[in-house]
Image (cartoon, rainbow over the protein chains, first blue to last red):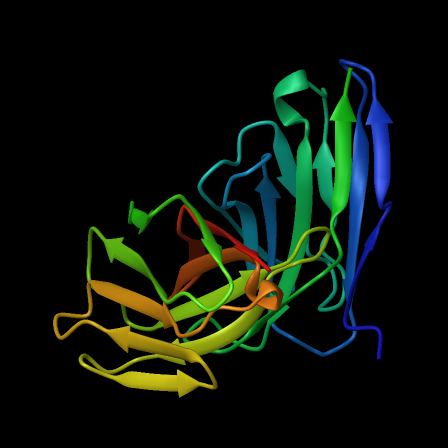
Length: 113
Length: 108
């Protein structure tokens, strides 16, 4: 079972470059989330989506963009990479917002130099 | 914006010891979850609590939800090295917000 799949697993970007982190889930979940996790810290919500065509800001949205054209896919876009965006990024999905389990991908380790 | 504070931030103990981790919120939880994250992996759900005063047990782990639904605790009995990881509480009311985390290291 695939679950939540993130690509790439690792990436090094130069300052000012852009990239898209891919996230796909095959569980037909309506909710999807993007988080960043800095070393030794908890997870901070970047953006989330409650269904196809609907996205909303989380706790730390600046410098990022998302889209949700299908139920399965929720890509995260970095337009002008900055060293402060060096982090591990996790995508997650869940069936609905209230009390149900969220399933996470394996993470993308991004370094901006 | 809801803030979820966890304490302690770090905990380093010997195998066989007991420990308690706390999660406190600035507002009332509708439902509170506890996740554990191991190095290099995403978090995995341990438990969901929804009723004030609720107590749930998962083998050696005991989860308690405060009567006012603004705090929760996780107690581990006789900790084992396999319990090592980052423990995260989370509010999953309408979006999933995580606490600051408690990093637990259990030495043999």
